[in-house]
Amino acid sequence: MPLRLIAERCLRSALPILFGLLAMPAQANYGQTPEGKAFIDDMVSRHAFDQTTLEQWLAGAQQQPDILESISRPAEKRLAWYEYRRIFIKPSRIEKGRAFLDAHAATFERAEKEFGVSRYIVAAVIGVETQYGEYTGRYRVIDALSTLAFDYPPRSRFFRRQLGEFFLLAREQDIDPSVVKGSYAGAMGYGQFIPSSYRHYAVDFDKDGQADIVTNPVDAIGSVANYFARHRWQAGAPVAEQIELADKDSGIDGKHSGLFTEGLKPTLTLGDYRKAGIAPQVKLDDNTPARLIRLETEQGHQDWLTYPNFYAITRYNHSHLYAMAVLELSRALAADAGQAG
Image (tube, rainbow, N blue to C red; front, side, top):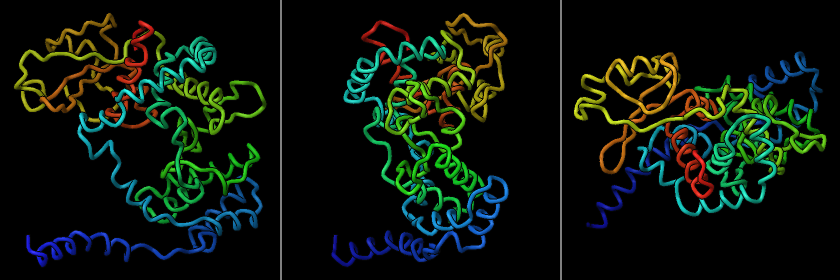
């Protein structure tokens, strides 16, 4: 290809990025913006924070432009299942997971007994989120949350709430909010809890006086199990099963179209699917909520009937691809022990 054409193509591909950077708001002292001042006033009036302290914290927060790019293109929305699966279901992650289960066997056993949540599901969540604590995030949480709270209008309300929750957490845990690191969305620790989840679901599982999911794997394991228990995990109940539709060519666009519902929360029951001619192997009541999903594979597709425990996993991350990755990894981790995932 002529050098001129290569240069023109590079310029065309670079222009959107350049325009995006030019459109970015200049770095400001977040505590001095109208939105930042309103946030500070609210935290002072509702939670009795010291105004000067909040102003200092926000003055030190740094805008992170690449976070805005990351949050607009999450893997769960841009990848097909087989591409997403490759990230998480690999031998190295499975082996590390088995070692993590062995290293914390007593903790997993106690969490399973106290919360009724499969140890393999808990381990798989931690494995998908951070490779068992190896990669817990490179951004300062205060930078991530401030960038999203004040420079990301589509979800600024949500992230301002999370920023407030983070400051409350810092006060409760007596930690310096300027040093805690996490994901581009402000999630922290082994299980990547956002601040509101940290405050509501983290538990002091080792009874040392602090619920620490950032550096303490015992608290992290107990906290993930507690999260699922609080989101109605059903002990011993199935999560999902692969099924075969009677007419494979009619799928989503054919006679089975009404069985593929929108939204993560099931709106149909197992009885509805049985009436439509689908015969799942699970022994669950006809009134059990269920949802049929289709996953794109390199060879075509797979159809899965999912149950309340699958929906519980999507409460952790609002994606059926995420839930399926957790399920598959949990089954792989359980394989050596001869247990069902």
